[in-house]
Amino acid sequence: MIYYILCSLLNFSFFLVPVTALRKFPTAPTASWPCLGPVSPPDPLVHLGTKLVNDAAHPWMPPRVGDQRGPCPGLNVLASHGYLPRNGVATTVQLINAVQEGFNMENRLAKIFVYSTLIVNGNPLTNLLSIGGMTPLTGPDPPSPAVVAGLNAGGLFEGDASMSRADGYFGNSHEFNTGVFDQFKSFSANYGNGFYNFTVAPKLRHHLFQQSRQNNPEVSFTEFRWFSAHAKSVFPVNFFVDGRNYTGQLSMDAAEAFFKDGRFPDDFWRAPAPVGLEGMGEVSSMSSVELISFCRLYTNVINMAAKDLYPNPTGLLRTNLIKNMRWLFEAVDDPDCAEIFPYGRVDE
Image 1 (cartoon, rainbow, N blue to C red):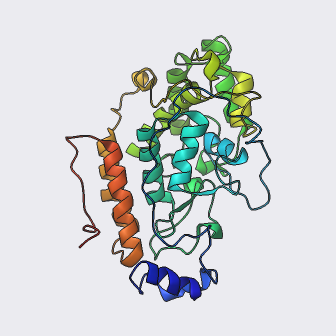
Image 2 (tube, helix red, strand yellow; image 1 turned 60 degrees about the vertical axis):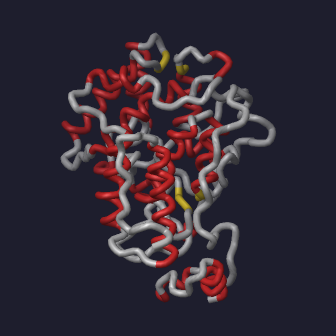
């Protein structure tokens, strides 16, 4: 109750959280469950070049019982090296800073991915996202029909036809799957001379799509997933290749470190400059479906996902959603893209 009162006073509104959710609050505000609302997104890095990221300040540690790990190898690595909280639950600022620091992901792409995922899979009430499954560490849930399911739930940037996880229809879709990853290695051997690159990527991506269509009677390829699957096909080339020898060729030893072991390779240096979706054109060359733009992704997140999950938000939840949607729109940075205000503006 103390937590509820203090958060309410700090946000100038007492009726912010349903009474049924109070039993999930701690007795006082904590760093894990902030009550001041979301913080403005971080700026791009000051030092933009390559640097050692598997360093003494970020040693790899295996996840403990209760720590969250999920379908995204990159985020698993960042949590196990301490760039993210090692429990696998993080704020938007922590996530954006981590992918920039650890992988040199460009600031714009980091914000688009993080704010979209928070709205769909995270907890806008506490501004926390689990990189794995549902956990009380994300704090009190927003009212139904919202479900704070974490990345394991898929639906946006995670889903069927993964390069290292099985489809959800077959059971566990968030843990490393040797059989699926063997195809990654086989295609790299056959088409990349033992390396994963932009020659291998479109062939493997096409194969995985077709395989899911043939074997999974519940396969789901939404516009979100179609886009994210192609994006994730370029991530290993753009983010998992050592920045000192940035040739676009990912070795299988390095790939196994990231995908299977959830760790940086020894003495790993990040990309030599901020990088995003370079190579998407090559990967989508075998696709018959046009990939959606960032503007359409933003529009779908707001009009389809957010409105379904949060049909009538009030108080702090409404304020936080408006702010996060605004930062997502600003990251899209498209003069032809119209901003959407399903819940009005903060000052209304």
